[in-house]
Length: 175
Length: 323
Image (cartoon, rainbow over all chains, first blue to last red; front, side):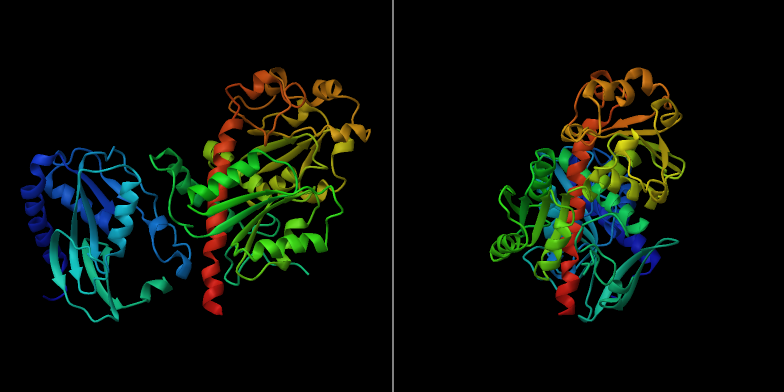
């Protein structure tokens, strides 16, 4: 599939929302987005599913202190702190990110969630799954899959609607 | 030779003094501390950021609060931490200090947190450590106590937000206080409107004017309309040097009582770096009163130290890259 446009993204989100409803409707799920893109996607899903689908306000994770590359690249530029405004113990969580790539972000997010408590289950939903998985972790609910060469990155933007940019890998270091 | 506490790109490598730092860096320290402070409220009060790093607390001078908050900060970042309380009673300076240092370095230490009764000790150690080791000054003689100053700035920001319009008064032994020196530097870098120092002539430095502070010798004028009051611990050893008549006399003139507190703005906050001498520099009713934020300062100390430790160790990746 080609790079999805803003309209495509809306369709993908609606399909994802339908799957989420099917899988989690009877579980009083809680919603967690990973900064920054994952929070945008989580908010968009929340809007489609309605305010009362999830059993609490949107939680956010920064994962900045759980990454595995501190020794190589040091502190990350500041993002908003993690905020889980609910108790995760014995709850069903929907974890949302924009792009699934190596699986390292999900690994970090799971570690952080477990420092807040012991959820009953975690379901991972992502807008885009791309090739290049490095860990035995994969998303449960996927908007679309893309095959990209290793020297290209996907970047989600949120200006006048959500859209995806494909750019040279490493470009974000210059930001 | 002066060791630079910043890397080439302006990141914190050591944290030795507030002097010479720029406002964005002080703001970054406080912003990071704000993020870390939420960790203390979680079920697991720990993040794995400094897992595998070894931090040595080298305390050549006694301390309870500072040492334990540094220790807790390191542990909440998942670093391994060891405490060394090293007596300075022997003529242990110069070479033997370096011997101690190199021995500890041989244990693959990543960071030294140093407190010493000699001004410049942390700086001296920073000049002699291996390139991959960071040094944090936890108080050196009468020179500097930068993490204390930053936790105080963090406390002020939490209560007062903007620094520009504030009037801040520091009361007591400014002359011998490394805390006051670092606070004054931080307050002026952050652009505080008016910094006042209040104390007897014998306890104020001669160069007060050049520090950019206003000098007051009585509490009535010094505390008028201030937003923040910082009381300093009166060090009893100073009294033996005939700089002060007695603790009772000092309390009468400069002790912060409820009556004197009324000179300040009604919403002024009262701070103290601890440990407090009740009935000497501060009355119990004020230390435990509604305007006191003294115990909050202790908690903020952990968050600030987490910020500084992670920033300094994070900048080592830059050094590794350039090798």
